[in-house]
Image (cartoon, rainbow, N blue to C red):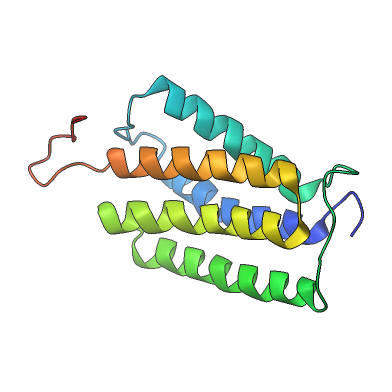
Length: 154
């Protein structure tokens, strides 16, 4: 694998497609986002770091696949995770709740961490862990409670 990861680019396009479609279809929807500035900043840093490092391999910071058929495993596992992510978006498109929040935050997190481990990319792994922790926290905390009032911190 060279400095440009074509597979990573395809993965990013597939991950972003449901998000872009949702944003276009729900332009005026106000989402009750967990209001923790540190978590939001960490999520954004992790997100954009993962986006960049899934596509661009910085020389001397990644080592490539470390076992025979590593690339095949990388592609198959990511394909299954991406298919699950898109299927969940389709199935739960008009729903809200904890199941949707958890699944749609955990799957991209797993994709980024798995990809980092498979290509042994240290910076991608760091950004993926930061993204995963912040994204899952924000997603879970942003789910309205049963009575319609957003959960408060305990």
